[in-house]
Length: 254
Ligand code: SF4
Image 1 (cartoon, rainbow, N blue to C red):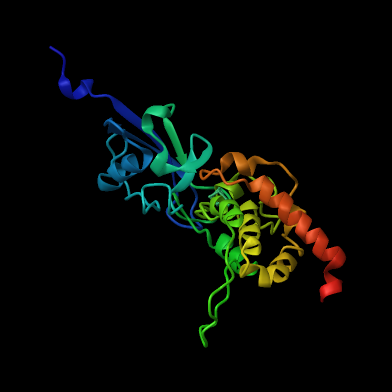
Image 2: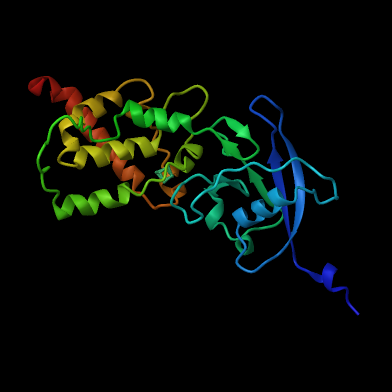
């Protein structure tokens, strides 16, 4: 008679562990019982609940970021079998085993798989990726947004700041300040909005310095990596045209 326990299908994961930002990294292997519809986040949760390695050694609890579990919050982006993707939508059955899991490499590691994406948020501040409202008086109704602009803007508004586009971009590295495709695409989004357009020049100027749009080398990896299917190369081309126009003719309207 077969031993039912040992017959259970297993999921093997190799995880890159790092205790803190200045600690060195090492790998640990885990073996879990397979369950139907299991995704990487479920596997990580199982390991966090019972941090015991494949060879039976108790280890430290696993750290990773996750929140919405439906590809909306962007927090669980990591390298899964070498590819930047969301752990919540990475189904175990679709992955080759042992499944290799690492933190994104373009951001500082906080601990294990949790990284600090502050660079992206600082870049969004740099380009003023918002519509300023001071709140001191009633501005009345804003300009109407045409259906054409709504249709173009909606896909751009789906950015979840996951950082996958920065991860795959060769121009985002320790020698460069390149803000990356996501931020450029947000400039396009806010500049196409009739209210946001009032500050379009400020956003373009923020992208005309070091680390701005001129640093894009057109590798086009970003558009492939984006889990939300955002037309990033189209955004970069559009913002590039706007930046050139502003550089050549901006002095005309001050
Ligand atoms: Fe992620 Fe796409 Fe936004 Fe880049 S543009 S941060 S890949 S959602």
